[in-house]
Length: 477
Image (cartoon, rainbow, N blue to C red; front, side, top):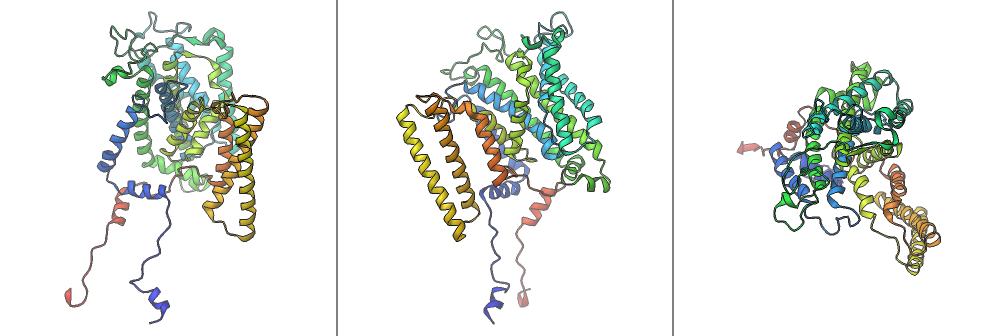
C-alpha cells in the first residue's frame, strides 16, 4: 500500500476545520437542550441584574451613576433589537429610526405631562399612579401605526431610496415636535412626565422609580440598596427578555423565513411566492413598536421630553449598534448597543494625558510604534509572510496609532495644554473609525449571524451531532 493510499484510507483522521472562539462557543451553545440553555442563561441574567448593586472597579463609571448608565444600556439594547428586525433580519435600511423613538416618548409625554393640552392625568381617564404603565402598550400601538403609515407608501422602494425616505421621516417628526408649540410646547419640551408609581413608602414617597430614590449603598437589603436607575435597568432587562423571546419565535416561524428570503434576494423571494410587501410591512411595524416602547422608557425615566434628543445623530448611533454588533444576530446587536451606550460614559473620566511632558512622551512612543508597524507591513508585503489575522492586527494597530498620534498633537498638546481632553468627548470619532475598520476587516460585524435551518433546527443539529453507534463486522455480528 502506497503512502497516498494510506493517507486516503478509512482510518486516516479527517482534516480538522479551523474555528475561532466564537464558533466554538456557538457550537457548544447549540448543542445544549432548551432546559440546558435556560440553566446557563438564568444565572447569567441574575449576575447582570446584580451588576449595578456591586459594580466591579474596572467596570464602574466614576463620572456617572452606574445604575443610570446601565439603564441607558438597557434602553439602547431594546432599541437595537427593534432596529435589528428592520435592518438585520428584513434587510431594510432605516436611517430614521429615531422618529419611532420620538413618537413613543411623545405619546407618553402628551398624555401625562402637565404642559400638554392632552394631559389625561389631571381629571382625565388616566390615574397618575398607573398612567405610565397604561401608556406603555399605547405607545407601542401608536408607533406601530406610524410605522404602518410610513411603510405603506414607501416600502416599495429599495436601497438608498428607502434610506432617504426614512431619514426624512425622522427629521419630519423632530421638526413637528419643535414647531407645534401649542401641542408639544416646542423646544421648551414637556416636563413632569409620568413614571411608574411603584413601591411608595415613607422613605420613598414617590416610589422606587422616582429620581428621589438614590438608594442606600450600605444597606444589606438589595431592594433598598438599588437606586432609581437600577430599577429602570431591571425593568429594561425584563422587557429585553420578553422582546428576545418574541423575536426569536418570529425568526423560527414563517415570518422569519420570509424576512431571511427578502434580505438575501427580494426578487427571488417574490418569484418563489413570498409576499414581500406584506412581510416588509410586518418588520417595519414590529420594529416601530419596539422603538416606541424604548421611547416610553426614556420619557418615564427622564420625566422630560424635548426635540433635541431625537436628532439624526442618535439615529446614526442606533444604526452603529446594529452594524458593530452584527446585523441579523439578536444577541450580537446587544453587544453593539452595550459598546455604544456604555463606552462613552466609561471613558468620560479618562484623560489622555495629565501634563504636557507626558503628552510628548506618549507622542514619541506612538510615532515610533506607527513607524515600526508600517515598516513591518512593507517587509511582510514584500516577502508575503503575513496571514489573515496578523494582517488584520497590523492594520488595526496602524489605524489606532495614527489616530492616537493625531489626537495627541491636535486635541491635547496644541489646543488643550495640560491634557484636559476627555476620551468620552471623542465618541463620534472612535465610533466612526471603528465602523471604517470593521467595513475593511470584518464587514459582517463582531458577532455575525449564521445561516441555519430555522424550522426544527435544534432537532436536526442534535441528530447530526449524535455519536454513531459502533457496528460489529465479520464473525462478531
